[in-house]
Amino acid sequence: MKEWDKEFDVVVIGSGAGGLTAALTAELKGLSTLVIEKTDFFGGSTSKSGGTIWIPNNIYLDNQVTDSYENAKTYLDETVGNRVPESLKEAYLTKGPEMVEFLHNYTSYMKWEHTPYYSDYYPEKKGGLAKGRAIEAAIFDLRELGEDLKYLRLAGLPTKGMVLNSSEFHKVNMIRRTWIGKINAFKVGMRLIRTLATSYNPTALGEALVARLYKSLKEAGGHVWVSTPFIDLVTENNEILGVTARRNGKAFNIKANHGVIFAAGGFSHSQELRDKYLPQPSKADWTLSSEGQVGDVLKAGLNLGAKIDLMEKTWGTPTSAPPGSPPFMPVAERATPGLIIVNQSGKRYINESVPYHEFVDTMYEKNSDEAQTIPSWMILDQRVKNRYLVFGILPLQPFPKKWVDEGYLKVGQTIEELAEQIEVNSENLKITIEQFNKFAQNGVDEDFNRGESAYDRYYGDPTLKNPNLASLNKAPFYAIPIYPGDIGTKGGLVIDESARVLDEKNQPIEGLYATGNCAAAVMGETYPGPGATIGSAMTFGYAAAKDINDKVGDLKKTQN
Image (cartoon, rainbow, N blue to C red; front, side, top):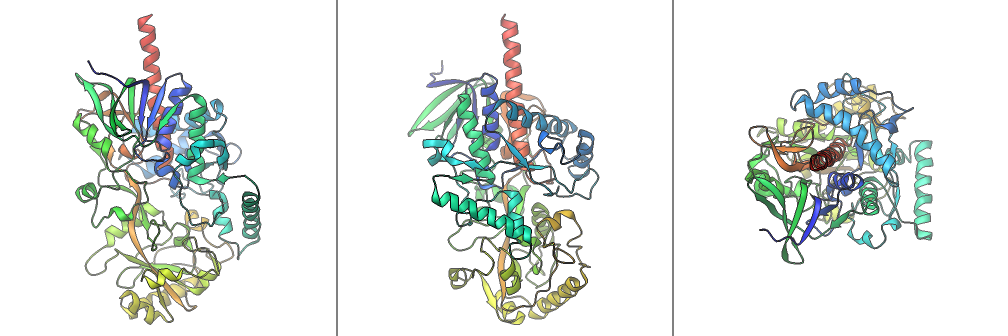
């Protein structure tokens, strides 16, 4: 007979949005719940993210976006296709809105705002929406966390203390270009002054989402243990009884009366698994995911005969790591007019503004000995530097001297000099830029159609004929290396519409659930819109808790 140190109805492994949503849902439905987190901070990769969730047809879109189940289903069919079962797409489209409304109705803190015109990633496809389906957690005052604030994972964004939500960022980026940019910059500045002058401690994006989920969970009576790594599942006769974890340096047995939910992220930080499964070259140094994601729960699932899928896929994003900083994700930069990305032959090979996962897929697809794309080079001129934010550096603010001194940022007074610095064919680079400048003058990218999609234009400059095109001709010229990174891996344990982990015969492993990046991505090989990662993690975390609660209810009926 196993000796148990603690006992809960539900045990959740991992404290990102998926895990916290699962635990919160379980608690709100009357199930005692524990979340264990291996690192010293709760929040996982969600804390480091933009914090938006892509949930079609949710209540926060009312009166702003016309949407429906049928419309969203058409869009998922156009993007995800048949790469995942129909049952998963249908569950996402029904349980996602249900999850948002449930948390809205039964918590004090889970409040959201629509992010207007942050379009779907493929708005021109059938069912796509240029107005966007993304919502984000409202700005949160961290004072609400009290003593637990020290355990919140921080994003570490290079914003000099300024707090901006998603809808504000692209406007503030136009501070030197539009009145809307100036007004929003003033608003953000006043928020900063309030923060400096009072005890107000605001946060936004992923930190706000995690903080709201955590506060809601604590308010509901749930428990979160940080610095408590998962070791293994405890099973008997193929029945899952609980988990073994390490707490205060000792093995700790935790009984899970009704289920264990894996929500521990993928394997981005395991170089061994990256080498085994992902396209090459692939380095853990390029990931934006939170540390500790090395596939622990994946291994435990495989030991039980779980089925896996999509192991070769990531939620890809180009990344670059300035000296002394974690990798940076250039989203707005790639849409910035006057900025291009070239391969090591000095040629463009893609519409720079495409959704980030598509950019990474293309980097691998186009990489060859004749024209290597890993790394690629982001090229910009002084006009871009003067007008827009670049890697968190404000307009007119010089790049850090350290970037140049350590060879990360290359600088040339001429295109030829820059080409020499980055070791690409100078004639090719010169021709590429001349051609791009002609496109900018005409307002049409004849090579890659940059600026034609509503998604491209979201981060562009609305004062220009084509918001994503401007001439690149004002010295000095700069180059920054770009790598095929990720915000997490997509491959993992295969689940059904209730987030139950399936075995090789597609039968549920009783009592085991998974959500987030440790589960095979519900979005298949694509990325339909901003927050599809977090949205699906939360949706299937909710689905798992709901399924457990339904089974407990059935069990009680049987016992009575």
